[in-house]
Image (cartoon, rainbow, N blue to C red):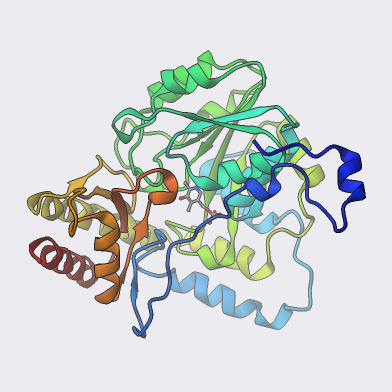
Length: 376
Ligand SMILES: *Cc1c(COP(=O)(O)O)cnc(C)c1O
């Protein structure tokens, strides 16, 4: 916590001073996209879709070029209707954001006062905490034994100032998941005044029958919000469309403070087309299913430790602490081969790296480079 400047100190400042705590926030660190001296590196650092995006979504996006002077529909009604139809949801219970990042941000802003808190796993996605800290709320990190969310640990952190519990399931950067029975147990144990946010950014990749994204729990609850994104399975990260399914009261609060035009016309058109392209979605899941076990096995064979099991389009991998073999050195070595991966040091995991599952040639190149690194 930062020093709390009394209000008159801010007024007496020689220049404008932000609210207490703002400058203590660590800005979000994105996955690296560039490396010095290499023209077209392979980007395995941001969990983007290795297959790109649906040709139908690309065509819809291109078709929006003639209407750039227009404001978008503030309620994103075409996306709303398509999602409601596809997942059997009440359209008026859907909320939209500039990526699901903004959905988290708006929920934080609507529910947090200074001194309130949010609870998340210790390796929880960084976007949850940034918005909470901007509201001068405390971020409570629950221990994740074995790199996996533990419901009892989350519950231990909940107190009378807790307003939101954020659970990415499967998690990022861990890739691990908890079964729906555990999510239900968490929900049953939470006070009804606490919002449980179930971030399903990677839910579409989780094919185990024990997994459930929680839409059915949200339907019958007053305090559950399920979020999803068009950034991962649908390959539309550039267009920034996230959505949530929430109880009426939460929708009412949300829609009062969001920016009116927080999704774009090209984004809305492409999202609807992407939602309709189930062949692309199936191919994306199949690619992950095919290469994730192969990568895990190859990595294990060279003495590295994949965290798991992952139910996502990425793998978190542990490196030795031995000089010459560390995660930091591996990241630098891979960059010289044009392979960009994600350091997880900002998540408190300095001995791990996160690899997005790529196309076959990317995955093979990654394993070859790592084999050289481990030998070298
Ligand atoms: C990528 C990701 C999201 C989605 O972010 P967008 O803002 O929708 O692009 C949400 N949660 C987690 C855990 C993610 O990794």
